[in-house]
Every structure is written in structure tokens, then in C-alpha cells.
Length: 195
Image (cartoon, rainbow, N blue to C red; front, side, top):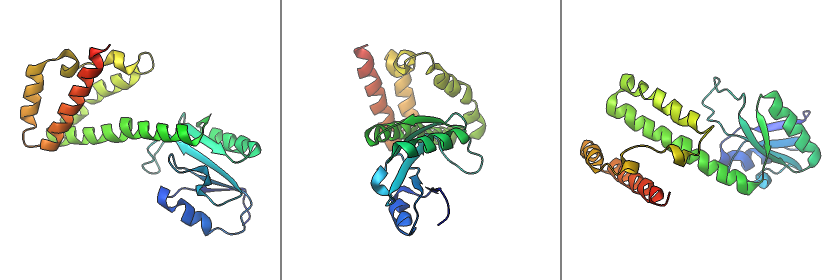
């Protein structure tokens, strides 16, 4: 095979299977997973280049996206850094342990919150859900200058039992969501008792 780099942009469970089908390749085999080990590809020269970004299709913007990466050699590390810069990303040298933690945090902060956005969309409809964008953008923006704990607001941190009971009444027909609401509210209160 006559190329320098092969990027395996496949689901995590298919990385090794796809890599094993590529015979005689002497370049760098790169996978894009946040959770799979560097050794999950069977090439002699290998690298991981994980973008912390939801890739939802052709319109995904990688500019300024952090890429956590590692490679099997120092020489290949420089090549991966160059490739990331050409994509407009920010190269961050990593290891598997840090990538695992970053992936967990990406799931907690992005995937879980997206599910909560979906619930809000279902509860109040798309037009009203759009009206949540300013508060969501402000919450994310404040991360640049404040620790998230310092900007926590809401009825749980204020111990506003009346508002919380009203919310739970609105979730009466949604027992699973009600449980999540109660658990997160409890965790917020416990955390802020010690602050």
C-alpha cells in the first residue's frame, strides 16, 4: 500500500478488525478513539488522534478542537502534531489513562447533557427549547473564568424545596427522569454543604 498514513475512522469495536485487513502497510496507522489503546491497531507504527468533538457529519468543525494523541515513536509524534495542526486542531500529548478520563468527562458533560436537552425539547417543544440557548451558552462561557462549582445556581443549591417539589410534580409521569432530578439535586446539595 502506497501511502504514509491510514486513519481508521471507524467505530471503536471495528478498529482492530479493520486494521488486520490491511496487509503490508509500513506507514502510520492512526485510530480516532478516546477509549481504545494505542495497541488496538496491529501496525508497527501506530498512533491515536482523538478529537474532543462530536462528529455529526460533514459540517463538524475541527478548528480549535483539542486532539489528545500519542504515537509509538517520537518521530511519528511530530507527524501527528503536524496533521492535527493542518486540521486546525490543538495537539495535546496524552497517554491512555488521561484519554480514558477525558472520554468519561466528555460523555458526562456532552452526551449526558445532550440527553437532558432532548428531554427539555420533548417537554416544552422546539420553539421554547431554543429559548434555553442563552442560559446554556452563558454556563459554558463562564467556564473560561470560573470554576463550575462557583457558578452553580438553581433550587438545589438554594435548598428551594417548594420549587423542587413543583418540578417533581411536573415529572410525575416520568419516574426515571424524576429519579435523575432527585439524585442530581441531592448531589448538588451535598457538594455545596462543604463549600
